[in-house]
Image (cartoon, rainbow, N blue to C red; front, top):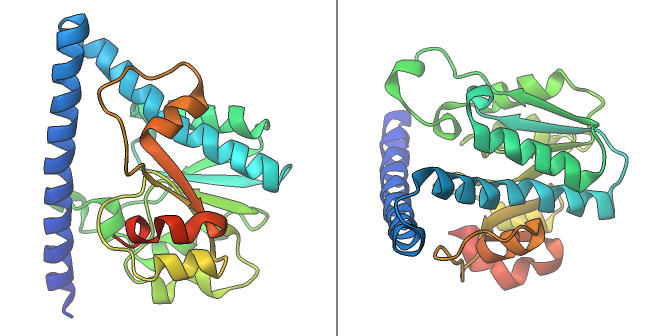
Length: 232
């Protein structure tokens, strides 16, 4: 399939995703307004609490299964201006119980910056691998930007000695063979939306309770239960 057609298809997925998020967010805003009045700042704090709970659960998951390891958290290039991403990183360190966590980014490939194409659609395997090569002692890589479309070229999946991968805040769009990658242990876990997610309640203070209302952590142990959601 020509790359231009792939980009067009991916853009359609992105538009659909943004539209769905708009309606979800609008529904939450309407609920919040009915309950507490017009308080956009409180709503944003509420959504940040939910979003950050992903980091806490991933941190706990790794702490329980692989404590005292080196972790690389991959983020969007503008993470310093994004409070939600910063709060997620802090929550992950809290959940893991260690500050042995490095935060880095994948640079937008030349020629794509002005096209406003999401990073997960424009990056290539070599862009992803280039970042990992800077951290040869890393044990786990937690990607907040998904994986590149050309998975077949990704050294992080082809090399047995590469760090293990986890995905959270999974971007919209198809990710081929995701179930197989989880089943084979090449991807340790992914965070997906809870099929019964609640968007009409304030976020609980307890991070695990907030996570359970919005998300599900899928690993090899519970893959079959959520396989349809993972593949979609």
